[in-house]
Image 1: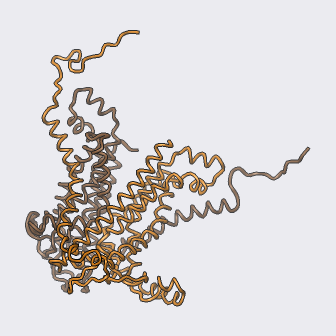
Image 2: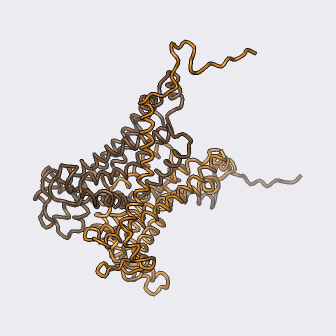
Image 3: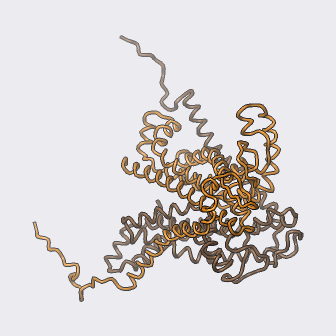
Length: 328
Length: 296
């Protein structure tokens, strides 16, 4: 065995002068610049909370908890209760999720397990087009074309379910084209691309050996999906759904246009409603003083809800990704 | 001798209910895809058929934007086209360099440290912040002190684009093989030089296409602009002062108007905006196909 002599890194053989250990100024400046750019993300997130909280303190302090979560919203009498809007946002988003999730997960499975690779890319492009159509264009189409088209359908469904206990409460009269359900439908279309692409990423991490094992045991493709793909990707798909839910709740312009702008807490899904983002956009131009504080406070409320949803979602995705690394 | 039952087992395809279930599942998946095509085709058909009649050179460049009650053919959307281009353009100018630098920090400098991981995580979370919140944020922090301007709109859009650019760039940097970095270090290059002349050029295709997708998304945003630029009728090519206007906010305002002319202008503006967004996306796809060196 020959002895290995360790070279001194400061004076490599053949080097005319020792390499300096100090990094050049430009190099350090660039590292600092990159760090600052990275920290900007955190700074912006903190500033969002601080600045909106500062502008809405008067609402929080005068209304109190009971005032904030009351259903009364009357700018004329300085009563600003957020409950009806919170209800509208949650209901419309839930409708969107219920409609969009089966569709999105189906497309994700289609892309990963059914179609060959060279066909999956065009399908991805087409689904992504839904996300490229701007929110305001969905809103314009919704209010001018879709709402008048769908109104008679709602009316006939409502007369059809008249008298049936639960269904009458959900789908009965009053009906309007611009309603919780219309907002939910349009939101469903808008969040399909994001849920599809995130679920696809998760499903693509299922180990090939698991799938082949399932096939080797004689499983059909569907049985393979149920037995090999689904247990692996469950957590990640839940994360994808939560990200979609966050998007739906934050979506503004389309919802503001097609939801009917009526602050009500009702079980009727075909009745007009009002979402948090919708009321902010519609009433902000004429707001001042405490009215404006309340609207900014609603924005802060929306921010906190979506951040919590997104944190949970990322947690799900991270955990399923970690488990994946453990198994492979 | 016992006689083994002589029924033949077909190993090629499962029969009966299992086979039908598999067929049904496959059909449902295809059906889901076709179902998403319906609203897409419906909305594109409407925007094109209703918008094409409004589009003319006069519509795209004419100024000022006429009042709602005026019929189509008076004035034009020129101010909104100018506003959209300069506001989105400046937002891109802010967000793309910062986003790329942020991703460089996460991937090249932060490494496995907790801060880089935390920033990457929060950038992911930040992509979920509603656009309306970004608008309110810039309103409280900028507009209340300096007034409405195109610049405020650019800031709001830049806040939206930043996490998207960070994410897409970060993913591209991950794909650059480590041997490239090691080879450059072996030649004695400093870290910044390695990053700027080796790593970033190797990932440039993916970075550009990710940035273009972020711009496409920002160009169509309404809510952040609504609180930051106000909506005026005259052309304001000065980004830094005075209220401005954009295609998206014009569509929003005109969509709520009962007048025929306003509705026609809204469709025309919608078609213009959709074309801009789709063009950006197509360019991004071409860049991806042509210039990406490393893929998953």
